[in-house]
Length: 460
Ligand code: ARG
Image (cartoon, rainbow, N blue to C red):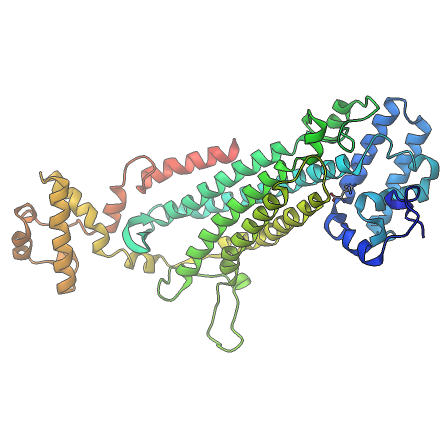
């Protein structure tokens, strides 16, 4: 077989080795780009025709041929082979088999170097649009789940120690805003995809003045890459996607980690839905938080994908180098990781059954110590002194094993004259919650405002 398909037929006398063909094939990395490759090829053919490089009859044959190749791929009638090297050569080979001379003109004024990165930008744009939509779906779900829980008290933690009273709504909305920043970052990555490389040729531009603006418009790009060398060497749009994906994966890992904790018997705040829980092969009683654990485990994987692409780009001289084909390994690994994860995250969040009683019971009086200190401030103590007195009171409560509003009056008076007025009502979680009235705070009135802001963010 002569290696016509990979541009070797004229230049080389010898054949490629089988081992090299296997190594050099990027089909396992890039085959999924076939729809975009066909789309980009059609736009390129139209640019060639408009520039008078090919005839209207050639264009017609190419268009028909590309449609047939697409149909054959979809039906499974056509499959690439390693000798094709990549998706671009496979499609061009089949096109030429089907439409002969016209097909053989398609690669005029085009290189795989500008072709591959055009395909990838087109493909990634669609992926990001889809994943941004999935993110919005998660945010809508979190909003809906938060809304009934403005007064459902639970502990907030610092250092994983019970700290102060908050509400389940406030906590779920914290997750909402994390995802909102991810959606913003996905929008930045999406915009970065919208620059058209096609027309850069192999590196320096073309001997044809193709209308790149028209190609960009046809393919839905917003801008034409302004420098041919940069156009074929640049993968920053993919870095942007991976950075956004890694940020999202880190957020999902933090949410997953909290769900794992909450589902433990020690917390008992939540029961996981059957649909996304695992069992144990030996312990019949187990309901394992596998889905939440896998949310946690995705972060290192996607962060490694980002690291992989950055490392591939590191030190690469301009312009195209074969190293760059590895971009797709990292990008698609992250794409696939999130594609598998996001629907499960949705099912998990939708099915969490909260135990309001357990969460309220965890709001012991010590979580209201800061409220008590603030009350002592209102009674005229400087905050530092109020902090000290309240700390001593908490210690006394722990010694006696009681809540601070159960301490006898004599005990209170012994601690500070400021406590002589008593502390009744101060160990009430609802009161504590309602008192968190600063903007962005946990008070139900403030969370209601926040819900409105969140809705606005989703509609913007
Ligand atoms: N398959 C390559 C990639 O994925 C595109 C071909 C680049 N050009 C070349 N002369 N090898 O990046």
